[in-house]
Length: 174
Image (cartoon, rainbow, N blue to C red; front, side, top):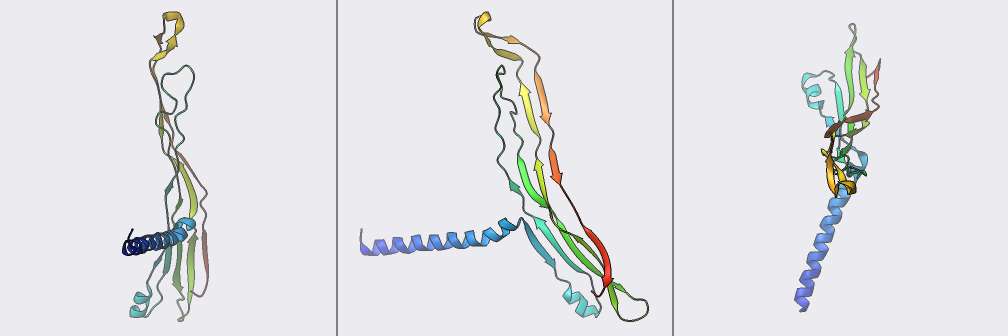
């Protein structure tokens, strides 16, 4: 291999490694947090109207799909149990942080009323399907032919688990 080819190949590999490291470093904090903060800038409205306006911030969840549990093979059935497996999803409920001014009727001072509902974890399982064929397993007493039976079908119910919380409060200042 010529020295110029080696140099070009080394430069390309170094560039690809640097780009992959930069993308990986940028993606880690958002994925580790589970939510993405979304500030709502209302300072311009406050300055243009010369009054206090609400302060608002939100947290949006990042959904992460999990690995579904594969079909289970059951003795005596032709089709596996949980033919269409349930897919787990993890994420969060959106969070909200709101502080709104509560003006005094007499005077220029403001108090505030606030709502703080932090993002909370959410775990779900998508619905699944379990089907059974109308035939039994091969029977040696009938020369290896399957017998007839009632077909079966069942829907696996979806699951949602979360614990949500929040605060509603009022106090002096904004």
